[in-house]
Length: 299
Image (tube, rainbow, N blue to C red):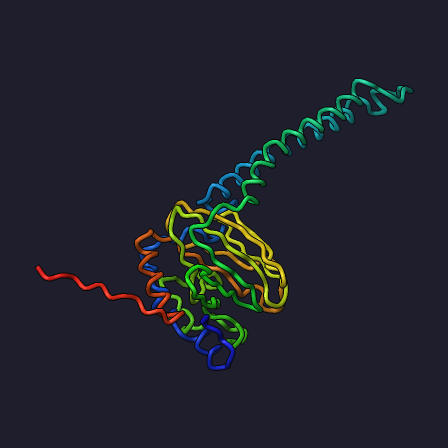
């Protein structure tokens, strides 16, 4: 049965305790990759093919837009200079120029067709859900996430470390900083790290089923190139295959109420061996499924 925080005691435990032991996947040994960096611009490092494709598409369209903008700006300046009243006191009286009209119709069509030819395969790659190695159901709640490992029979709730529900305005207290450090994070990861993280194996296809329990939320990990609205009563899907081990952060990306800014998502991508070890502990911790003991034989 999934962990549910339905009482005040449960809420206090969620906000004041360090992450449970089943979540410890040696956080100090994982590089924090998918996080915003102060003073930087641009995308987070893309660690999936989806993210790489989207970033390439964005750059390509930016180049096209820049060329069009420079061309139109230059044309306006040239016309303003060449055909002002001083240089052209007697304006022309014609109303049509067929070659120009054909050009400004055909050229934009070709540009749009080219953009579509590049972007549609990327869109299809996002929307065609492959066979999953791991299936996770993510349910958005006000204001935390519930993650269920569908094929493994367990799930857990993920709250922001130092969530504001009981902390008032001054949330980043010494106690919260201590919780962050105990979980393997630094003070700079406040507002990003959760008390329980989604753990997935590297180079495996992960399918996330996304829904909401109350209002519309959105499950987003920028470094994976995924974003999906969590709509109550509907079950949507996204997928990713992370190519690099590390810690990645996301946020709810639909305005969902007063604490919208305080429901982050933490995903740890680990080796297959570390994932198998974590999975065994998590089954026992969250579902009460006792795992067989491994006894080493004596020589």
